[in-house]
Image 1 (spheres, rainbow, N blue to C red):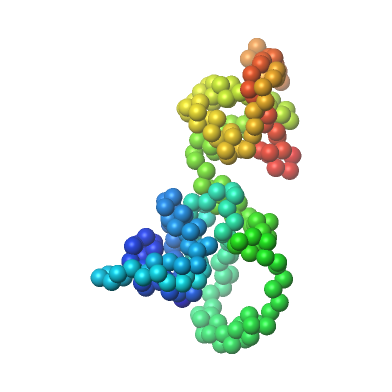
Image 2: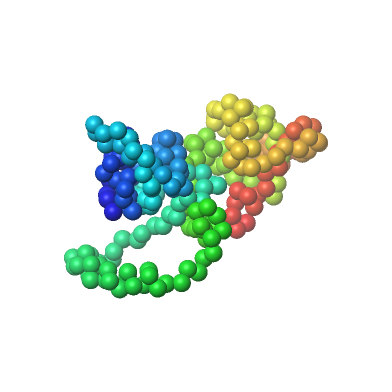
Length: 250
């Protein structure tokens, strides 16, 4: 095993860690796309190019496993919601410090080795990373995935959630133009093409070309105890936003 820093992992010289079984990165912040792509490539690769200073590259068998440690729970590495290469866990801090922890762990090595040698593998291999997406899902993974979303995507989701609460509806219907106009009214500046990209790629919604009901607050009732809902029949390529998708346990 070896413990690296971020700059060690990003360096093209890798002779100090390329042959290790476990490659750990402490206080990791690999927030660039190329960092994530490199991790993804190495996690499924059987060979790697070993390179040291003043030495020609050499192809070696690669069997390394990565442990990434960070106090930044939301975006220490780029990851999307379809990724199956990461098992993310939140380690709670000790309630009381144990100054002899390292010594006690060393004393457990022989017993731990025996356990690993004789244990039964209970999870069948279902993917190239062995585990299915459902088996490695954790709340910490969900926090990381959501933390990687763009600010605009978070703003759009928050706007839609607010509309569900305000209009008290279970479904909302918007074309790209409708949603773009509504976001502008809410002082959220974003291009229509980016709105369309978020709807289709991130929210996984497909448009339907037909008539639909457009809902908004009825401004004529603003001085009353309860605001009304203005409804207008429109036609176009609209998306259906469901409350259950954006508001959990509703």
